[in-house]
Image 1 (cartoon, rainbow, N blue to C red):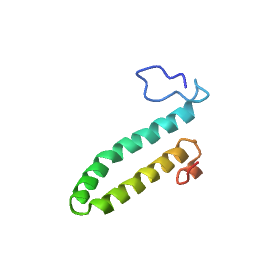
Image 2: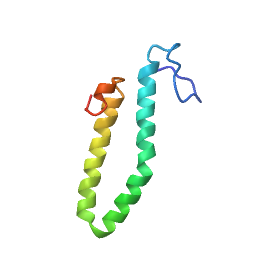
Image 3: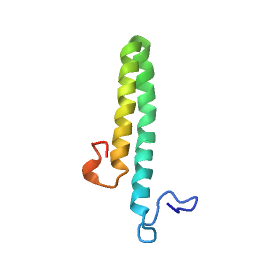
Image 4: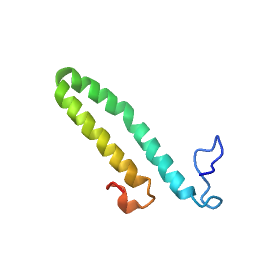
Length: 83
C-alpha cells in the first residue's frame, strides 16, 4: 500500500489504494478494541461454563474474521457479510 512508517493511515488523495488500506487498518483496530473485553468475558465465562465458552469463543472469532473480511473491501454494504 506504500504507506511509510509511522503513519497509521494513508492519504487517500496521494495513494490510489489509500481507501482500502484505511479500511484494513480500521478493521484491524476495531478488532483490537474489542479484544480486551472479549478475553475477560471468555475467561470468566470459561471458569463456570468451559465448553460453552469455548464454543462461543470460536463462533466469535469466526464472526470477527467474516466482519473484517467484509470491512476491508471498502464497501459499507459488505461490512456485515464476508466480502
